[in-house]
Length: 229
Length: 208
Image (tube, chains in turn brown, green):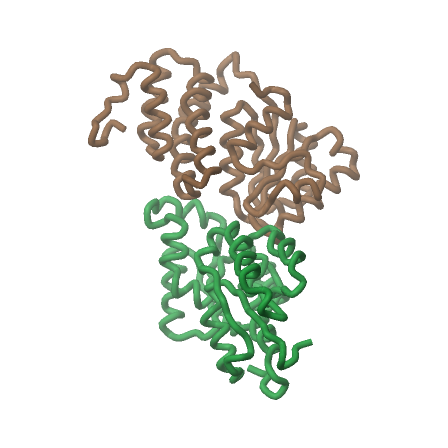
């Protein structure tokens, strides 16, 4: 918030205050400030994994809670996500080269056939990446063949499917049925999510897990692979 | 089967109120044929409010009516509307997932989606309230960068009109330009909404 009325100079803050300020800046969707804070922490010798976990993911977790509680709405959450993305862009190359960048697991994710909506999926993807997953994003409008091909190629720990429309969400059931027929389902947990979904629907189509929002989906994914705190 | 002694309540999305009354007028239906109550059209952006809103009106008024017509499609409730209606045998709803489908007709709507998956639809109501429901409702007025995020995969804006005027067509075209989408106008009229209301009409006034 270096340009605000209070004129907080990020580099003058100690580590704890800077991280707290980054949570505030992320909450307010201030991309430049979050990026600056990320850069400062790295400059102070912080491990990229810790910057990601303590400053960015924790900030986004707070956003997730307020979204769930109806305090923040989609436009605001997207601004927060944009701010987090700025920080992650700085961290990603460092994490990729880092020797102790242990992947939580591979996660294949995509929006189902007939659906071009990907905002929720992208938020989940970002939170998964923040949680240490290697995310393979299939994009939008995916027929079952795309999922099968990606599973075969990447051998993921989890498959995630997203849909925004009531008319497209049943296709998730089609994919799950096909995975079951091929004997893949017993080995591969399938997570589903999207605005019109609920636990009842997820149960009805035999999905392993329903992720009601991005932050929770990442937490549940970690639990599935046995790496939750 | 409708009889003249039956009392019917229509509970509809506020976005359909004007159109329902237009159909009623075109059919020359008398005031006693049905009563109309509406939920705020803004629920278009908050589908989780639709089912509780409808249920409240049904519980408050249901005993006074023989039949309750729900003027909604699934409208993003993920099947929640149909599950709620199972508890109320007097209720029935418009066919399809949303108003675009029942205005255009289900096969025609499917054909338009088949033609271009990236189709963004506006009805007369949505053209009139584009600024409030889409620009402000989606937060684009506050965060212009969201326009590109929301509409990245859309290719065209299809104005499926009920009672188009030159002014509405021009507004719809302006909306398409604002969103950076190709523009198409398809006059579809009231579609299944008209058939739905027609079943309440005495036999001699059934056609719109």
